Image 1 (cartoon, helix red, strand yellow):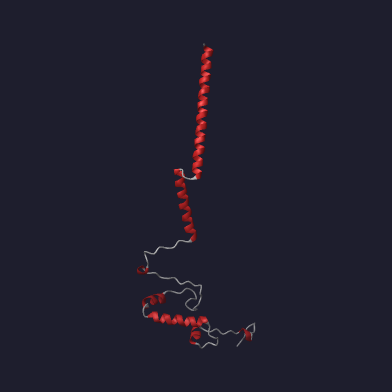
Image 2 (cartoon, rainbow, N blue to C red; image 1 turned 180 degrees about the horizontal axis):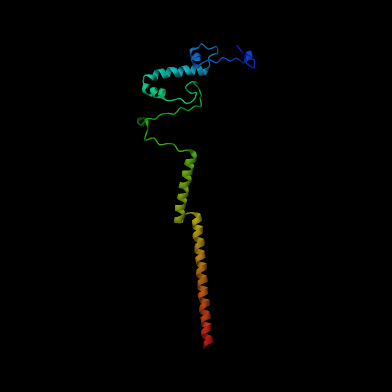
Length: 163
């Protein structure tokens, strides 16, 4: 049998145990926590199999993409989609808002409350604004009165000049 261009080294030969070998205990590697945990998970699945046989048949008939059907992986980060049924949904349960959403809502409510008080004139800024407006109105009234007096004085001078 031809070896090809490169000669394989004796250190490069790796033997991988299948998950079945590992669970059966026939592999050469020592048992680890994950293997023990996998056995416990399988035992729980066997106990639940009688109760949820309908759901398992649905999972088995689903199509696997790519190599998922060939290679079984134990990825702790893999999130399996949960199928919620209508009867299992809790309608009365409200979803929790995130911190940012809560803070945003509180900020909006505080702003609305402040604006209401502002309109009623109960905040310090509103009082200052109202005082400023009153002062400006007085100044304008005085200026208008002064203009009227000056106008009246001009007319009186014209009237005297005509006589």
